[in-house]
Length: 250
Image (cartoon, rainbow, N blue to C red):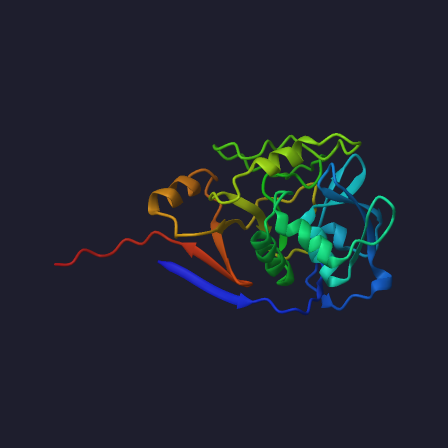
């Protein structure tokens, strides 16, 4: 059985915080972050509001936003991105980083990410821990196929390319593998102990995957549900596949 729904994401964006409250953003209340090319991420230099509770990864006491988080927050007016000269990087240049697909996220992947975030879901990169400090209920997804080494981090941003960025660049973006770990809205969500995600999201491109391909992917993730996103000219569609046994006819 195929479950299918789609919603077109508009051009107006609202801020959905960790408790599901939505409202418009004032630029004066925006956080500020500096893009670090070697890390492929934005280092937060002035943090405002509570978006950090469900967005960004913490390494060595610093908060970083990856490229899709940076694009989403900048669109909302919740983040001002700076270069190494403290000059503002405009939204078109941020879009250029996304469209290039050089930081572990393609343009279509970004479209799927921001659609889920606009609905209030908590979304993190697959296989990338929110923080290196873990509470007692921390859940680590360990697929049989080694897409990302989860012990890598953004600790080194001092001029040398860090391991996590290199790994993300090596991902075959056209392949079927999870892009995000997705959690339901939760006012008590903690990065140190996020628990098990509600589902993993894979991006589909080209022709539909075969049954063999789907089974090969789904058998690797300990029964965690997988959902699939397809993006066509900005229209984001989400699909899930269930196995159905048909009754035998007399």
